[in-house]
Amino acid sequence: MMTPGNLSGQGDRRVALVTGGARGIGLEIVRRLLADGYQVAFVATRAEHVERALESLSCPEDRLYAEAIDVTRQNEVERFIDRVQARWGDIATLVNNAGISPKRADQDAPWLSQMSLEEWARVIDVNLKGPFILIRLLAPEMIAKGYGRIINIGSLAGRAMPLIAGPHYATSKAGLVGLTRAAARDLAPNGITVNCIAPGRILSDLTGPPEAVVNRSALSRIPVGRFGTAEEVAHVVAFLASPLAGFITGATIDITGGEFAA
Ligand SMILES: NC(=O)c1ccc[n+]([C@@H]2O[C@H](COP(=O)([O-])OP(=O)(O)OC[C@H]3O[C@@H](n4cnc5c(N)ncnc54)[C@H](O)[C@@H]3O)[C@@H](O)[C@H]2O)c1
Image 1 (cartoon, rainbow, N blue to C red):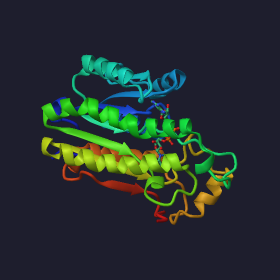
Image 2 (cartoon, rainbow, N blue to C red):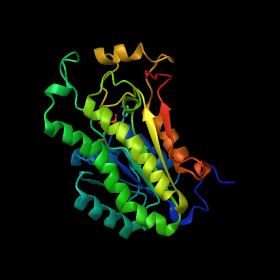
Image 3 (tube, helix red, strand yellow):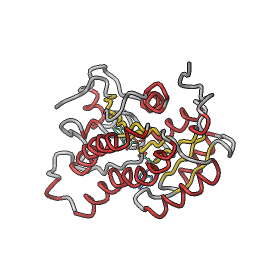
Image 4 (cartoon, rainbow, N blue to C red):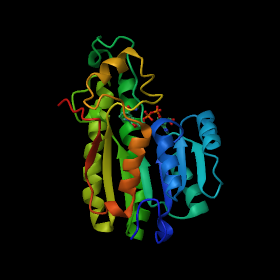
C-alpha cells in the first residue's frame, strides 16, 4: 500500500509546482514535497529569495527548479510551465501558495473607505487571479492524464471575521474557497482533486515576530495557546497531494489551533 513519503508506483505523477516557494509556508511545502520524493518547481517574486531558498534546500537540479516570476502575468507563468515540462514532463500537483497581505500602520483606522483601487486590485490579482491562471494552464494536462492534485492556500481570514487582515485579503481568500469548489466540481470526473487549506496564525515573514503587538493579541484568541508552524501546513499539503486523499475534493481544511471566530 502506498503511503505519503513513498512515491514508488506514482510513475509520471512526481512533478509538483509550488507558487511562493521561496520562504515561509511555501518553502516548507517545497521542503516536504522534496522529502516525499517529488520533483519540485517553484516560483516567487524576488530573485534573491529564490536564490537563498535554492541554497538552503541544496538539492540536485533534477529534483528542484525555481525562477523569479509573477503569478499574475500569464505569459511568464506559461513560459515557466513550458520549461518545467521540458525538463520533467507533466505537472501533476499544483500548490497555489503565493499570497500577499498589505497591512496598515494603524490597526484601528477605517480601511475599506481609504483603500485605493490599485491596492484592492493587486491583492485580488495575486491571491485569486494567480491561482486561477495556474489552474487554467495546468488543468488540460491533468485532464489528459486522468490525474491531478490542486491545493490552494486560503486563510482563516476568508472563513471568519477578519480581525487583522484587510478587506481585500479576506475577500480574495473567501474567493479562493469558491474557486476551489468550482474547480473541484469541474475536474472531479477527470481524477483531479481540488482542495483548500485555511491556516490561522502561522509565524512567517508575512506575520512578523511573535512579540509584535498584533501577534501577542492574536495569540490570546488561539485555543491551543500557540501559533502554528509552516511545517504543520506542509504536512496537510503532503496528505492532500498523496493518493490517500483521493476521496477529498472541494474541501477547505482549517489549520487554526481551534480559532474560528465566525
Ligand atoms: N502566515 C500566516 O499566518 C498565514 C495565514 C493564513 C494564510 N496564509 C497564506 O499562506 C500563503 C503563504 O504565506 P506566508 O506567510 O508564507 O507568506 P510570505 O510572505 O512569507 O511568503 C509569500 C511568498 O509568496 C510569494 N509571492 C507573493 N506574491 C507573488 C507573486 N505575485 N508571484 C509569485 N510569487 C509571489 C513571495 O515571493 C513569497 O515567496 C499566502 O497565500 C498567505 O496568504 C498565511
